[in-house]
Every structure is written in C-alpha cells, then in structure tokens.
Length: 146
Image (cartoon, rainbow, N blue to C red; front, top):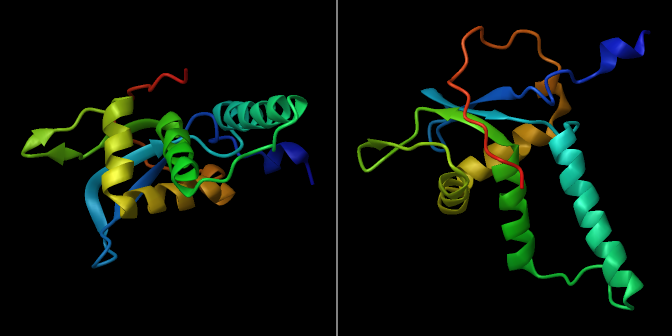
C-alpha cells in the first residue's frame, strides 16, 4: 500500500466537528468547530514544547513534571485553543461569539461537554482522513499559536 494514502491530510488544514447536544445527542444544526489534528504541525510543536520543558526541569535536577490536576486541565484547554481555527453558530447572551483565544478558552472551561467533544474529535485520526467533509465551511478565523 502506498504510504501517501495513509496520511491524515486534513490534520494541518482542519476538519469540521459538528457539535452534538449533550442531552439529546442530536447534531446541533449550524454549530461547528474547525480543528487541527494530532498529526498537525501545531500539535507536534505543542508536544515538543512540553517535552523541552520537562527536559529543562530534569537538567536542573527537578522532576520532569509536577503533577497538578488544575494545571493539567488548564494545559489541555490551552492546547485546544491553539488547535481551534474556526467556529460557527456560537452566541452568548443573544450576541454572536467571535472566535478569539479568550472566547475559546472561556467556552472550553465553562462548557465541559464541548471541551470533551473537541478532545475526542482531535484524538481520533479518522476525522482527518475524511474526504467527505462539507463543501462549505465556516469563515476561517485563525487563532495565533504563540
């Protein structure tokens, strides 16, 4: 088999997650998030940064990481913010909610069911192989990866 046919080509371009209502488990029409995959350059850069931090700590004679549930949760949200490239159908208090790092962070913190769907979607490589992605996508708004 040709290895090129086994590349998750959409990992760097982004794939669209259609959010599912947490109670009814039905797709919420028009509410989507475009995400980069775990094989994307952005994701790999995030992971390399974490590895470098651990190596730097070990070089100073410290533990590779200090396990802290709150810090791990914050780190996972920050990763999701950086993997989110667009969204559509988000409103808050009757107003359109623009995609910004702060808004993405707030949504992933306050609505854990959204965060969980995003984490599951990013973690599933199959989502980034799909060729049946919608032909129309939400307006792209890039979140900087600082």
